[in-house]
Length: 251
Ligand SMILES: Nc1nc2c(c(=O)[nH]1)N[C@H]1C(S)=C(S)[C@@H](COP(=O)(O)O)O[C@H]1N2
Ligand SMILES: [Mo]
Image (tube, rainbow, N blue to C red):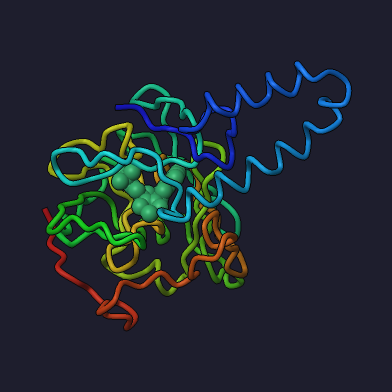
């Protein structure tokens, strides 16, 4: 299944697209007066889409759960595919040395497996989901965080999604740069080949299609946080103490 568009970003690509097109054709048919009205119609349509998306404000997309209970979310309509030949993760910003990692580089580092419940803000939940990858803290140690570094900003090769963690959160043992999910390489739909997995937090924190980690001097609100989500996305019952481990095991 392919990811679908977040309606507000692609008013001609959402589920109501045929109606939008009919409306626009109607406007064009009305001639110059109709053309003048078009921007207002467009604004009205955006309100309808906004209302429709309130049921699932994380911007939903693939509404149909796959057999494992997962849904696919993307705020953009299409995302390039990356693999061994063209994937790269870059760590930059307030670091001692800028680092880039290929998939082979990441696989060669010690891997950690975490089994935790995945849950997002709209209530869907998939229990006991295994993720595997490199501890974010290992990558930070590798690059070396400068004294002024206080937070991380995550960017995605979808060109749009961003997330963040404080440095203290990022250094927990249950924050992974994940290469595997459900005991298989992360699929493109789930944000592969590499996504963040912030186990103790709501799943919106776990940026898919991860391509950049920038060390910043403050928290920069992410895509959904600009739209009302908590910056600290702790799951209920998460152990918020620094270094909280959760069910972590080396593999
Ligand atoms: N790049 C990117 N990462 C993202 C999102 C997104 O739209 N784009 N959605 C977030 C949200 S709200 C959720 S619930 C999870 C969904 O992950 P999944 O599609 O693998 O189920 O990804 C998070 N990371
Ligand atoms: Mo979500």
